[in-house]
Length: 577
Image (tube, rainbow, N blue to C red):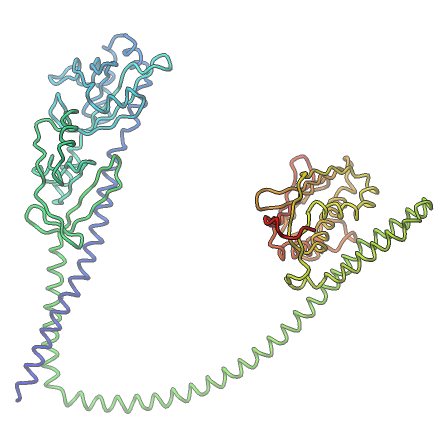
């Protein structure tokens, strides 16, 4: 019976070791996967850099005078030397020029035994693409040298419109392959057909990831892309969990498939380090568990005693913590009471501020019809013959004043009451009528542009007429002290689901103020004593309640333009006012 705890402890230790080994392997494997992703990203960047490094060179060479003269029938001696120097300086395998039939007439390797001069490469896809004015790109084994490389080509245009030849370069990737091999990595680069172009292991080169179809083989053979290569399938197998077996070893398999021309970069990373580290961690845990088991058996009694002492100490600490907690609760209650008191004071201050702003709004808005009545009375004194209609006009203005006081509640709330569908053109005409004395007094030339069809909007007509009146009056005020001709341009219209009106003046403009500044209460560009700066603040609130927007900017020719946009009514079944 005395051995039973030891056996149970040993079984528990082994179980813990198994769990630790799996968890450690997953953790370290994730680290290796992250490192492999970083390595793949580095390899991908290197491949892309190699592909794009000289992609522009053929475009430049196609416009070189030596090249164009040679295509036009000039001598190729100077061009051969020039291409040879370019190839040496840029590290390219070859640069060569072909005529319209694909026959090479000049090449950087003109003096070598494997010179391209005289050979016809018209069957190559890169030549055909370049002859059609496209940028040719094609990876293949060279027919003359037997060495693989990337061929880039562009057409040479003669007399500004005719492609009379093709300039091409051949770029090798042996240095890139050697770097993979020296690093001990397993990397392959495939084309869109799945044929391995480059590989850290030369035995994998020109193998297909999947068996090629007969159509693919015929197409590859027609352009002699991989002459003399059987293109047998690569001996590898893809497994679940981003893993694959290649070269007889199971590896992590990562793919970068966003390369140009449909190429793919496959990276096979070794995870042996993760396995070793997981077993090392497991051994350490098992060793520690065994040591702890022995210590536990030896010092069991001591632990019980220390546990009792800790319990007594924790109980004392708990009592102390409870006392501190009680003090904190009392302080929190006091703080909450002070907060509630402060909130009430803030609410009272907010109500007083709102009352002050509302009083200023009433004073400002009633000023417009009062000024209009004063103007009508002055006009009646000057021309007594018009007194017959004076009563009707003043009655209308009194109704306007009543409407202003009645609609002030909408400035404080966003209520949907008293909304109707009306023509924005009629509202603009009402605003112009109300401001007629101001327009006449300032000798303002008014130009109104509006469509023949109504611009229907839905809202509180009185409040929107208030916005129009504020904008028109601001425009008239802005032109009072200007020497130029006072001209007011008014535009009403509809663009899709938006109805709008614009008011442009020839006044002093916005100056240093912005529209958000002018929409703040008591901010104005008018001289001291000429306005309280509430018109745009009230207008902005009204437009916001109608889901509209306001814009303003200075005009290049002088003055400012204000634009107000509102949702247009699309449903013709609604009642139109």
